[in-house]
Image (cartoon, rainbow, N blue to C red):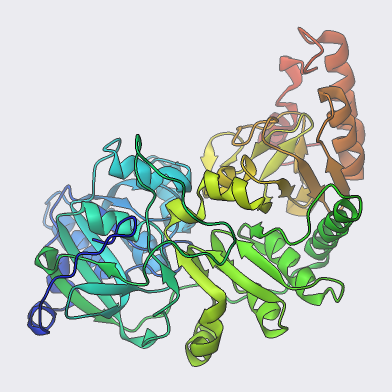
Length: 508
């Protein structure tokens, strides 16, 4: 197994590959009730598509026959409907970790039929490798190439694939024949060493490599090879709306301001989270003639990166997933010889490494579900209890970046919900780790401000005008009635907007 710069080459011919090829149904039959599955995939890129569908069908038949069948599913992050969705609908999952975005899976998590662990993406592999969570009993990994000597090339994501291939005693490979050689040369497969003798990752720019383009596996661990030619199930790219464009332009204006005043070095790499607001920032970069070539050191390389590439503005985009719509996936394969020179796909323990993020001085941009007037951010739970997607890797970047933005439209549901609230209903990012809030209303730079000043600036610059008086009233009440005024929060009014929304459907 490739690990930390060491390769062991097994000498085999093609026989082991041909003899282990089988149907998806046959591979699914090799999975047992109670197995822990470690699958490839990160934000709908590079996940297995054939075997999970077959496994879901098998689970349904077993359930109809009155037999128990459930597995634990570990991934890199979210996978597509043919994996997360199919297994959730088949009631084949007992536990899912660490991040998801599928409606069927989300519903099952929120009704309690599937247990869910929402972990930092940058720590998932570490938890597995140190035994804090069970190691996979079967790894199911999508690859784009298999070589006779046991080396494989991953497909459109890195995720936790190397970790799962290393830790699992059994391996099922899904060979995506549609990809051809498009992914060869794009991957940088390495894992950080474990304490107490871990050395720093020698990444000093977004384009530095520390691993190999192939992953060495032991062919004796491979129990099945299944071919597929399916596309990653990524929704078509949607052009940013005016609200998102407004947020993107505010961020670029602020970065230019900081650079011009000597508070921010030029040439720092960017990280952009998922969603239309984050996409809008990348689109604004592509359209900005004043902006030179940029690098990304991020998790997800989204389709919004392609305009930067086509306009010659993209240096290197380093991430752990290349998440493209079907149309863009076709375009990538056709142009891969040239395009993949600009992409590096890493394992998520490296893409989300606090050490590297801090060393590079990454400029981080992530979406908030809601933020409060004191500077805390909720990225994951609706009204404090209903899971949306998860924290993802936002905390990996927010706490370690040089400059961090949290982005959100000021209102949702036609104005019925304010994204700026007296106190968030769940805290993913504390006020110690947030720096700048941005909505279409304005930008609040919270650095160096005590709590009351933060609150007034957030209300003034980020809250929607319809909610400013109500938020100010809560703040003033807290200054008079809270236990202390360091954080002037009166507990009796902390969640009054959320409570009103649950009772009436509106926060006001």
